[in-house]
Image (cartoon, rainbow, N blue to C red):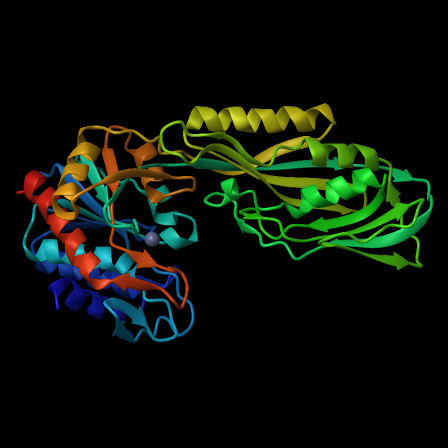
Length: 423
Ligand SMILES: [Zn+2]
């Protein structure tokens, strides 16, 4: 087996779950120093190994998502793919770390950047302050061979809030539950027209002129909501519909005096793809209406907005702010992260040529979700970045597996790029 897998096997025996990767940090620091590299670390846990002057930085994150028995990892091979027994494998991003170890063993004068805690919010990347000298960075955290990633979405979470007074009791009370929807990732699945439980509830509430007491809707800010539970009042008996169940209640509740306004807002808040990217065939701007709650008269909407460039993100944020402001809501934003605007440049072209030499073809890709590359590119705006990686399937789950031959082919690409740019 290729030496990459010898290194990778070694990594699987050193615990490195996110937030708990000290042992691997020590191991990598020591490995780099033993091979003649100057090593810097920072308080976030990032590691930079360098030697001589460098045009190219190679970058991978060294933490992993631990699910199942991990950090106890026992690998096995099946039909050309490497798996772990009842745990995540950590090929995301351990295979890349192994590749970088192999290049350090060869003494290549590149910069080797290992970032910490990528899987728990790009923590290491956000704290990066090393003085990188390279003009180019090759990130090795992609999961499809023969594809060169050149961009990703930026995003921001938006929260709108308003306190309502009480309204007069009218009609009978019901519990209305929306359920049985599939849900999905608010970025990479936003274009799939997956039904939004809050929108479904809104249409039902409008059709039956409901008055609202309480609502609990959605699961997480970054997923398409699957579930709504609301207590409402109606003057006529409420029918059940597909995905909507209704239970009459004997108790009475305080209703808000803004039911019609809330129902109107649910209808008007944009959800889904606002516009597609012209050349990449992925969403360019999107909004996920993720959460809605009404509790003790306070109504809160939570949305996540994404865009493939920072100007577009500002436009989407402003659109949401204006809509809610018209209704007297207070809007605040949180967790903003920059976009990595898709761009073909001399570096991505060179990477694509090397990919095509090995795979016979090459595709430029971008993703409608956040990547470390975006954070690094905003911190080092002059650096040109591209991302590649071997075929990895079902990462972050006990079914994670990596294709062995794909690792060997991608390493061949990496060696060609390193050969052209590093001594
Ligand atoms: Zn990763």
